[in-house]
Every structure is written in structure tokens, then in C-alpha cells.
Image 1 (cartoon, one colour):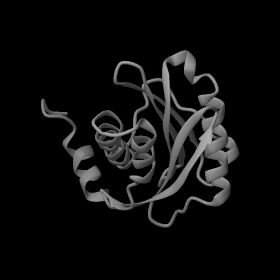
Image 2 (cartoon, rainbow, N blue to C red):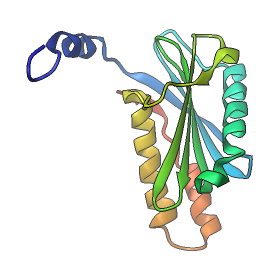
Image 3 (cartoon, helix red, strand yellow):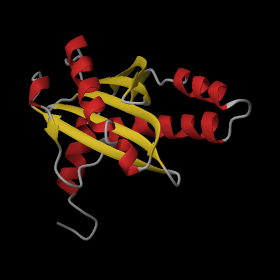
Image 4 (cartoon, rainbow, N blue to C red):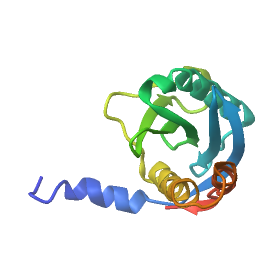
Length: 166
């Protein structure tokens, strides 16, 4: 390995990089939180209705104690049918312009096997693209928006990313 990193591993990542489909799954109220949900799908994989229901159940369990972590009541749930397994991310806006992130992982196609990810696990490039959109939507509509808070929250809920991310 050189001073500049693992060239072979970086080249392999670059050669295997591809677009993934992102689609919004709507918004709902779960555990006193307004939740926006998304599906992210690797080529040849799809997020099923069962996958989405399981992700929202996991999110509800996690969000049930979110007030203890300073939650402001807004959350984004990503259900990712990845190339190497399945993932659920629960991203919650908390006090002080911060966020809380929980990552759950499991084998592909086995939603009942999703478990908390290892310490330090962070979003992949495709998940980070959705979370970047959500950061911008939160800032644009909720923090910098004008008018009554209810209108700003409705604008945030309606601002969903859809299409391919790289």
C-alpha cells in the first residue's frame, strides 16, 4: 500500500461503481415522528412491501426512545436492497443542528434478520446521496423556510428524491 491508499482497492471500487434507483415510499407518523421513507435498489434487487413494512417497524422501535437522544420529531428511513445485503438506516434530526443515525444490516432478502450494524458503520455512497438531499430539504424548508411551521413541515415532507443516484 502506498502513501496514497490502496490503489487496487480504489480501482476496483471505481470499476464496480454504478447508479442505483431511489424511490420515495411516502411519509407517515411513527412513534411521535414525521417519517419520510425511501427505497434504494441495487441492480437486480428490489425493496418489497414486506421490506418497507419491516423497515418502518424497526424505525418505530428505534424512534420510541429518540426523545432521550434529543429528537426534534423528524426522521428519514432508508430501506436499501444492496448488492451485498439489506440495510435500514434511521436518520433523525436532533437538537443543536445535529442528527442521530442508526444502521441495521442483514442478509439479502431476509428482512427478519436485520440487526444493528457494527459500531462506526456509516452510510454508503448511495445512502449518503439520499441523506445529502434530505439535509438540503431540511435546511431549505424547515430551518430557512418562511410561514407557519406546519407549512414548512409539509414542504419538507413533499420534497423527495427520486431517480438514479451515483
